[in-house]
Image (cartoon, rainbow, N blue to C red; front, top):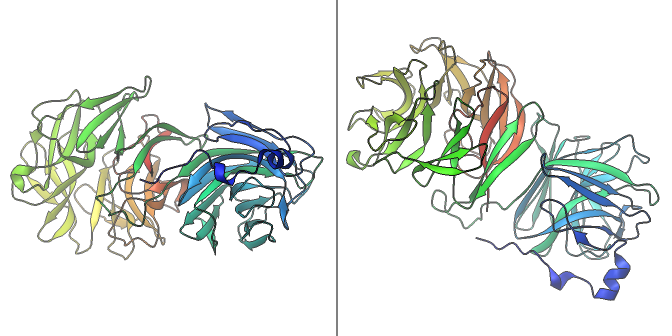
Length: 504
């Protein structure tokens, strides 16, 4: 774990100098930020407001410029140490008085107006750039991007490399980087500069996240980050963090009554009551090594799980039990057949879908719940995974890397008519069809991830496409991956999606 310092006292100026530098006195900051205040020679005092219900910030600021050797702007800041990812959706309010007005993320070595800094900058005319001052009092330089007027702005530090990534909502990120040796401990926050000392400008910022990413020293699948359980409203685009856990939590299901989320953590299943926020344990009896493959019957009466069975060499085996819990889950898959990872359950409860390690390869199988009889549906040397029935039972959606990258496919329940639905450069996993049968959500891993892998702690997108296929569009940019959306996680009304993101 890396500590997050809430005060950077050794970087603050002496009191007399500080009072001369700051246009307004510091005060308790909004939301996740420690303070908000004016920096530099600002004629009109700025302000910052936070609406807790929507997680939206509204910041007003004046200031002549943020360029050359000195800056003036309004700043809502906290402090960070080491590597970080800062991400938000942002937009100006109104036409604006100056096309060079600026908003964005900024990290600074101090609160001096001439501090060394890196600045993820969006101008009023749409120009976007990574701006930076390499040393106190130095000239400001920039690395521009082609994307204009982005909706999503992300500033990331890994070691001495600062990377600005921006996107119009729905599209992939465009990025630019700069090696910059800033102090390990920095002020970090959102800002507004009007580029006009006498005329304030206002911007709104939402889905604001400060993320502490995986350390280069961490060992995959041994060292874990904490988790945020989030819900996305597809109508508004707003994401709400239900809670943060220092543990690794994964794969939230939404119960059909719309009242509860079910997720796994450290081998157990937990329930989250959406009205009260109360967390409980779902009793799975001897099955205390559950992974993130758990699926509910459409009527919500039973839940199926994948448990690493010690009596079968510790491989994943499939069971089911009443939604109220049970000391004695009923086993579905047979002994000695190989690992079985659950993904789908038919509406009548008679058939489950799973990815099985059989004959030296992973393919998709259907299994009769009553008899345990298995039927092989795919047969590829490459990986087929993530199978799930459509709500009407006419199709099975799945992901396969048989054509190179991992893409979304579908087939009939008997394995016929296997058809590729996505055709792009990303690696698409875990298709989940909305309960109304209109849309499919998936998680898309970056091209740097091997097509057969879906690891933790990567920059991923949640994307959505029509039921019949088509070009997916991004609905959320997340730091996560494994465990983010492995299981069906649509709300019953097809308006919300539950998922997990990660941060130290």
